Image (cartoon, rainbow, N blue to C red; front, side, top):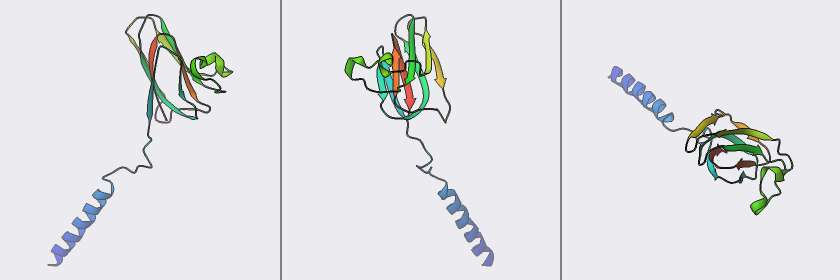
Length: 134
């Protein structure tokens, strides 16, 4: 009877330890957002955050794109371009593809990402660009 009691007690401790690690704590996970820019300058975020990855497709030949940390977001409507933000030299990433319908290499900044302070802007000509940010 004594051995059965010890066996039951050890099994109870084992089950409780397994059940504690069954679900991830939501404070440890990072909720990520996704945004696409299709052949036009697009304001992705007007606040600070973190950029995690960039990927996309050349919808026409000789496409090029650049992702900017917007230094002074004061644009509205159709005048929201990289040059209207006061500092066009604040490029976080840039790239392109010469051949139509080819995807350009994914830029992955890892789990920590690259922080941006004042907003995120994608300036593109004929590319479809997708970003993952928070």
